[in-house]
Image 1: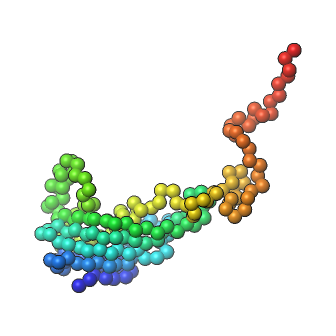
Image 2 (image 1 turned 90 degrees about the vertical axis):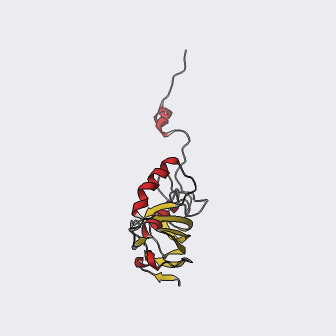
Image 3 (image 1 turned 180 degrees about the horizontal axis):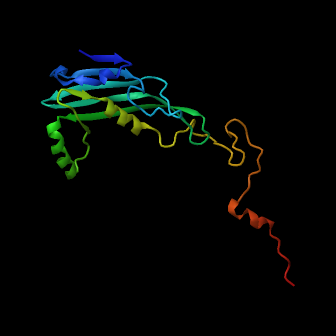
Length: 189
C-alpha cells in the first residue's frame, strides 16, 4: 500500500493505525497554499511540492524519512528579476505521542546531536504539513541570484546592468567626501 495523492493536504494527515508494521510509502504532491507557505508576491511555487518517503511506526512513535522537492521563484537579490530555484531536502522527522513530548524536552537539554526533527502527534493522527513547511522555509536561498554572474542594478540610475551597460559616470571614492572635490586651495606664499 502506497499513500499517494496529488494536490491535497489531506494526504499529509495520516491515521497512525493505518501504518503497517513494514512501514507506509508516501508519495504526495501538494501546492504551496495547502502547506500554508508564505504567499507573498515575491515568492511563488510554480509547481507542486513533492514529498516522497516512508512512514514507520514503532510503538507510539512514528518516523518519517524522505525527500521534499520542488521549485520556488524569488526575486534576484542583485537585479530584482525573477529567479527560479530548485530545492531538494532530505529529512528525518520523529513524531512523539503527547505523553512523551515532555520527556523529550528533558533529553534536549542534554544536547543530543544528529537527531531528526521532533514533532508531536495527537495519538491517532499525525500531520506532516508543519514539518514539510519547516523544511521548505529552511531551503529558501539566503541570497537568491538569477545567475551567478548577475551584474545587478546601477547604483546611480537603477538600470539593470545585465540588459545593457549604463552611461552613468562611475565615480571613484567615497560619495560622502564628494563635496571636498570642489574645494580649492591657494598656494602658500
